[in-house]
Length: 327
Image (cartoon, rainbow, N blue to C red; front, side, top):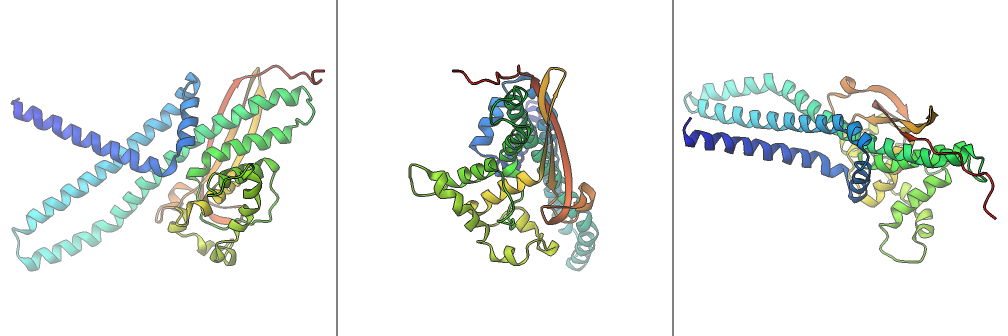
């Protein structure tokens, strides 16, 4: 093999490597923020979590490679057809191009939407891993308090804290650009989490940002008049709204609320292990493929197609806490 051929092969490999990397970043960055990165870095310190997450991370890289391959092949075919058209008459070229487009377009669109939905679903799986780790850690911390009958500790409190911890990790990937009923009953833990998320975005500074943000959360719920009028309407489920089209301040609280209601957490302490099982109902937002990836159901008044993502993680259980406070 000539030196020029070797150089060409390496250049091609670098182009594809950079292309796959660009797709990985493009399909990941919209769903992560600094807190998610920090949470994942903390979780990666545990060897069990690295093994737990390896499959989903590799799957996402593989899907990104598939998206890049589809993009590259499409570009190559377009260039090839453009060269072939130069060898034909204008009349025949136009007719054949139109026919080929009509034949290929439906299959190409379904394939494209399917791969993009798979990519989004794989990110949801990666974040569900982190959500499960956070929920399991909350259950691990509180299970000893509950077993020790500490004052103020209860199974319902442990469940709520684990569920909110999971929702905080799933909020970036949860579709939130829909109205949520602002009058449904909320736990104090979720109220605090919602107020804390909004407080970080307030331009004013005070000694208690959370106290200022908590009533504003309900005002934001009513900001979308179209959502108020069409709450629970299946026709309201549009792709643009599923992927969020309003301001971050408006949708961030909704995303957290939605993640909370789309998530089920089951704390489990068995054989000296303490952890949690997390079931996240991920909405399939891409058109043309919802029936392929999900099942039709209703979550918090929102009819749509959902894919349940189930994960489980645990730690060595703690000893029960001392039921008596130190004197």
